[in-house]
Length: 417
Image 1 (cartoon, rainbow, N blue to C red):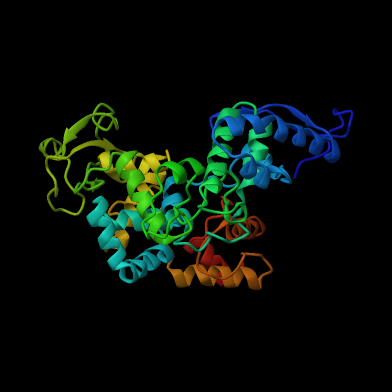
Image 2: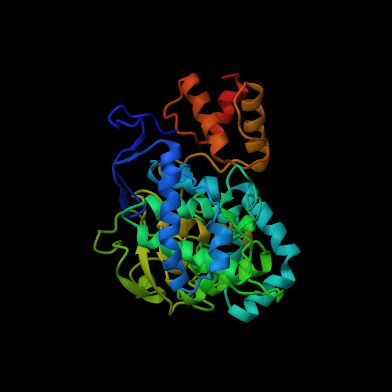
């Protein structure tokens, strides 16, 4: 929470400079709440003609912005450092979880007809779509959960008003959100999402909703809160903005060893899979490459860990979230939902396997019984469970106290801490 800063003569709130999301949040002294609201109200009125000049009707602007209160907590969340630091193997284990694999397979069966239509219409692999869905909202579990989601207009308005370095971006996203209301696709109350404004099953920002969204269920509106539209819009995003290549794999785990010089495992040299095989890079499962003509590059994310040949469809997943760790998690989760085995090579420090759904639930049950708040016993490791794990690790003298809910932790809990 913000702290009162004595350096502000009016008893305002001081935020320190910190680089966030490609920008820096400048040193601000926000006045007391009444004056802050007055300043915000003035900004709303000054922004009104600009919104109207960009196609927003006066009726829509006044309906949405007329009595809005800015969500100032979003400024804290934007500048906050990550609460937990995860190694790559922890990142993968937590996301390519038994819960997501099982649920993804259930959804693949339940929605087989829809997924077949999406593959026919967009030619994007169904398991990739399921994986993005699982990564972004745990297959819809958090779409309308007030613990994770909030009304987006107060957040976007606060950012457009008070975030100086990326103000143009947040102003445009606010305009995009107003256009969605203008088109009748959603009411302001229906538009709930993350602190930054990402919404629905596959977490669209307003710009993606407006420009990439698809009315796949043909009910007259585009909505990321409807599974058909969400998956179709995601397929379209991967195809158009990620340049997804029909019929190609994302890549392969390969038996590259750890003695390749940096000039080979440089994550930038593109060769066909067949050319990589000619210099000794082969699939870790012992089979041949399914698409020997596909162009790929060799990526060794952690020395001593698994190596990968990654292609354009890996980059397509990365376009959805500009992180190689995210793209690898999407790719691997898609493979696991499809029925593929775990990675053949372990990451350094990852000697233990991924906990099962039952084991995660046991961890949560034991932590809850010991007085720690895990946020529920559901087999999913969210921020509440991670905080509870870290608190237990600290009390038990476990090092590192990293919040990772793994088998070592379960062993300590079974021993009574």
